[in-house]
Amino acid sequence: MTQEKFIRNFSIVAHVDHGKSTLTDRLLEVTGTVLKRDMVEQVMDQMDLEREKGITIKAKAVRMLYTARDGQDYELNLIDTPGHVDFTYEVSRALSSCEGAVLVVDASQGVEAQTLANLYLALENNLVVIPVINKIDLPAARPDEIAQDLENLLSVPAGDIIRASAKDGTGVTDILEAVVQQVPPPRGDPDAPTRALVFDSHYDSYKGVVAYVRVVDGSLRQSDKLRMMSNSREVEALEVGIFRPKPIQTDGLQAGEVGYLATGLKSVREVQVGDTITSAARPAEHPLSGFRPAKPMVFAGFYPVATNDYPLLRDALDKLKLNDAALTYEPETSAALGFGFRIGFLGLLHMEIIQERLEREYDLDLIATAPSVEYHVLKTDGEIIQVDNPSDLPEPDRIEEIEEPWMKVSVFTPAQYIGTVMDLARNRRGEQSKLEYLDPERVRMDFLLPLSELIIDFYDQLKSRTRGYASMDYAFDSYRAAPLQKLSLLLNEEPVDALAMIVHKDYAYSRGQALAKKLKEVIPSQMFPVPIQAAVGGRIVARETIRALRKDVLAKCYGGDITRKKKLLEAQKKGKKRMKMLGTVELPQEAFMAVLKLGEE
Image 1 (cartoon, rainbow, N blue to C red):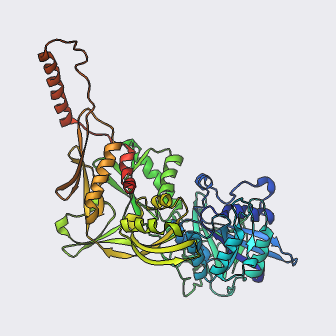
Image 2: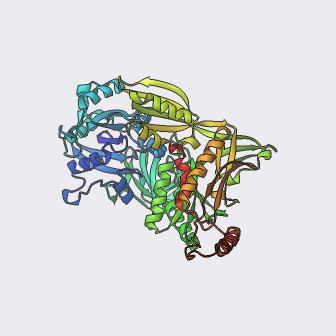
Image 3: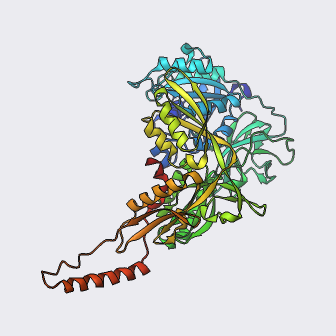
């Protein structure tokens, strides 16, 4: 067992694509945790999606043994966190398991939105922050300029900031030395009742739910009887161990150490991120602070293209849920699309990842409806209901008030794009709360914005309007009442529930018009004309018509009497009438995603 004073627990925080996973690889290599022959890029990212997209989706932990320049051996526990805004809560729990954070900033990109968001999380948890400027080997690197930005931000002298290149290994030993010298050892009480913080978990078919834990007080031993403090669920420790980076079973974990605990439970919902594990025989009085259950913010309908794939989709969701406590779903039916599921996600990236995993790993062909958010609806009889599907909205005469979620949005952008960012936010009902110059070239702009406007291509528009230079971060603010209405869509005079949306009454006409126009482009022509109508209540606010494909029935007539031609055209007209009466329209996936492209007009 390593003495507590020689243990260092730290995390690496960075904006997406600033070189966090590559730096982790170099640290594992330099400390000899992973042999050179076993080394692959992004060692910690085990999912194909993580490797392809270059992002970390799930938190991981690894123990490294490092002999410092003073000759002393140290146990370094690195907790690798996701970098995307959707997983902010997971990042906050992982950071509360540490005493220090290495803040990685790209030498060519500089400080970005997620860098600051994660930095503030680290400072909230009273972590020692070690700034590192990465990718100094790039031709576009500006290390001195960015060191000055970091000095202004953290009050650390620019000359003391570590310059590194995770790709070629420059400065990696300096980072390890800084961790040993600057990060304080854990301050736990080994004799107090056991308290261990769960910062992530995954499901193993042999061991049940495996919780990733940081022991704060006391110790964990195999066969200990333990209790979850949020739900009082009692479990037995089937196996206790550490990550190097593969799991290795040990005798136990003491105060200050990071490792894993196999519980035998069948659902990750019972071992939630942020929960505290204590001893059943000698429980702690108070859990560790900061726990809150995962809450989905964005909802979408997923339907199999082949209806007989419905049981396969249900099984696939059951399996994904074993490893993802934030995923919620319930069956729903749609007149247009048949049987499917209404699924709740943490954000748009979470939705994209789940959809890709369902299609890739389980070989499913899916149609996803446009995402919506959860509204609080006060009915005239005083009942309050939560609505995340526009088709579940009560009739207008039974609604007293509708509240929608608003978010605090921070945008970091070069100063030349202030006008275009303000314009974008204003068009999405945004309210500006702050504008601050970080330096003569870069500004931070804070807005309050409805989540429903944020999820419809706001990020894509922000990137395209600022040539990719702007970055953003957002967090939930509050629910606010607004004059909202249901915008229905009729196709061939039949309502399509899967294309309905909830919109602000001032935007109903323009959204309806834009949606009808977009659908006219993506729905293929039929043998009969197809009217597309957008309606609010019983009032049609926009209409487009997809013209019929027309067969040239006169092609076989070479001259001859006009009555022959009229007879053929009349016969065609009768056939078209019958088709229109019986006709059904097939919708491509693009029709459902047309809602996401409305801002491009």
